[in-house]
Length: 429
Image 1 (spheres, rainbow, N blue to C red):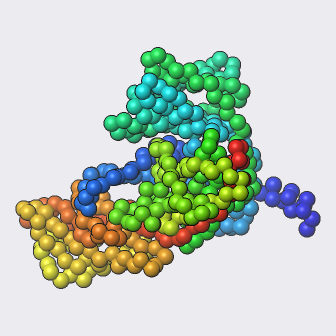
Image 2: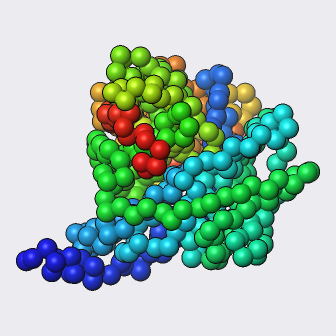
Image 3: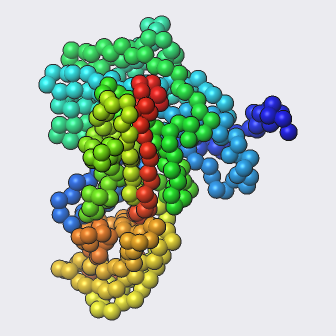
């Protein structure tokens, strides 16, 4: 078959409607999710009732689709990366989608605001921002080149005493071509000129950046340059039964620093990693200082990542104190053995568990959550795996039913990438 005929046949392959719907749902879920970064100083973790962490849903091929080669050929026709927001849109043809290529930093009084990302297409406009020592605001106004004004309300926000992040969303198509401006609702108002560029289209993930695949997870490192710093964005492809919780930028609690994401220069020096806090989980974008030596090379390594499976299991255990229990259940394909139970105070029950944690395995379970109950857990001081969980039970009850959800799993690499100074020329990504 000639290349032209092959090209014509590939272009004729339709994108399944379910894939289009899931692509849109992935964006909308990314808008609504909240990043959970828990800096715990003790090995006790308090899990509050109803705390649910969503992860950025990437646009992946469903395993349920019958003809994977058919669909894979289709989705490879157009990939568009959205910098600052960290998602890849996969579609059958190149869409008219505008993005903010570089973040915009603003000095505001004693603080600062960074416009980290903008996405605008036929279905929505979404803006992400981060602030330090500045007031938060509930909306921004976008003024397009024709002078039309559109109000984008804050759909999600997180904050601490000094820092905040927020995402602003408008559902529907806006004309954001040409020169636009954002009006930030502070006193006095701040007008920010912005120029969006049409999103670049790629035919494959390796075309976007160096790609490594280990233990079923394919990660692409997309290089860019912001001023005198390298910006690296990470995107991943994997099965849909889990989502990535951390690429190693923050690391698994209790794990050694050597397990975190790291960058070495060509002398072997470990470089300082900077991360701008975002509204989406996981953190997938980081910065480091460039050397300005055109011959310099950088080695990026992800020793391990943590993921959260969508698996759940219901179990029943006795509320009586028992020394020797050998009750084993399975969650996300990993065995967990309840070894003993203890009564704690008047209504508390402590359940000891063996997660069968194996540091040499490709993946290890280290965390689970109980749905509908406030609980605490003691973690192993070296592995971070749960040793026991503690929660209250009804007085006089003989048994308790537990629904265990959101199992946390470490997937080990390493994923390794070799990058050169040349990769970080302005406008490369």
